[in-house]
Image (tube, rainbow, N blue to C red):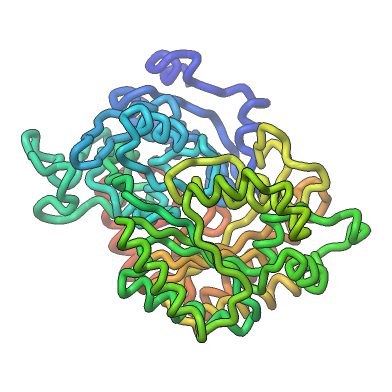
Amino acid sequence: MAEWIARIGDEAVIDDPTELQRRSRATFGTYSRLLGIIRPAGVEQVRACLDIARRYSVPVYPCSTGKNWGYGSMALPGDGVALLLDRMNRIRAYDDELGTVTVEPGVTQRQLHDYLAQQGGRYWQDVTGSSADCSVLGNTVERGFGHTPYADHFANVCGLEVITATGRVVRTGFQRFHNAQAAHAYKWGVGPYLDGLFSQSGLGVVTAITLWLMPRPEAFQYFQVSVRDDADLEPLIDTLRELRMEGSVQSAVHIANRFKVFSAMEPYPWEALNGETPLPETYVEQRLRQLRLGAWSFSGALYGTRQGVALARKRIRRQLRGRVHIQQMRFMNPSRLALLDRFKTPLSRLTGLPLERMLGFMQVLFGIKQGVPTNRMLASVYWRKRTPPPADPDPDRDGCGLFWCAPVAPLKGADARAMVTIANTVFARHGFEPMLSMTVISERALDNVIALHYDRDIPGEDERAFACYEELLNRMMDAGYYPYRLGIQSMEALRERSSSEWNHTLADIRQALDPDGILAPGRYPA
């Protein structure tokens, strides 16, 4: 610790036990020890920190801002020191013609959004529904996703700057050549493609990425559709596959079950149910009928020319009608949303719907699909808490319980139904609400992000929730639906199910890049 202090400064090294205990708290029970936090401010400081760690055989775990809620927050998969990169928060480069930007790990969604607005708003970033103050780079190297046609974040990376455990600075793609004109335009470079080695891995510290940004379109329309019956799921998924494959829909499409929709619209009805858990399906169905919503709801957006958006809208309407039982279908452009907001009070009286709350949620989704980050979605993490979300939400501090389980399936109705059946069965057995949000992430893949919400302040809930999560994950993998991403509590499951050839190959690569084994041991283990 003394050497780190001498190299990067006393204010950049945290070893106070109380502060370490606070920062090691996650949204579920963790058992490793956070021995310290070091916060380098640049590439040379990162190299120096790694050199010291290597000489003393101290494991170090890179993290960007520490807000990896639901996957482990800033807690570690093993005892060690957190290499917190939040001080590295520069936007290094921006190309207004090609729409590229180079960011460091500490750059947040809010910071990048504000920067792009200052540049004239010609380009949008793709954002997640997490906090506006989460790291852009952190989510990208974890292969996270968002909402627009650029939803697959790592697919829109064009070059990384990585520091290996031995201190070597590696720039991938064409960036390895000092004069390459297409370094930010052509992601493959020439020769072996290395970028993927440094996503979801402990093989290097990613200190910068170049991202492709989405051009601001001439026309934009948000759409939201609710289907009446649970049996509509299979034809809905198959229809969305056709629409995505033909190009009528280019954005990610998020499909939520009734529990997920209800939790977004209303807080847990503790008083009405006299504290009963889990939330009864009959209660949910009754409230959704009153809100004129069905068993499944999905949303997406259309981008392009006015003519192209109009044609896509007609195509979507035509393809859905006759295949699913539509409860509600809305297409919303900015002017129509503003009009509804203006007259929401008289319309609420006329319709009997809580339009202010419904419009508020729609406005948040409307913004997210235009690259506007928000903290509003964090309210859902407080679902099982008996107090409302505070103005400054912090799920770790406030004892929110959250696991994410995110299996991936082929984009077929039968596979969607199989995952739903597993989730419903497991959640019912353990007494939690199955919060399902399936995302059409590409023309061929469906990502089912399942949230398990609970209250960590209730004795025994950590253990009960983990048992539910563990059974859910194993049941999904037994059925062939493996997660696209894992939390620190289950990374060893990846090794146990991988082929020995894969494990040995990755172990060989790790040995070459990190011969002392000090960089993130246990994270996506090889």
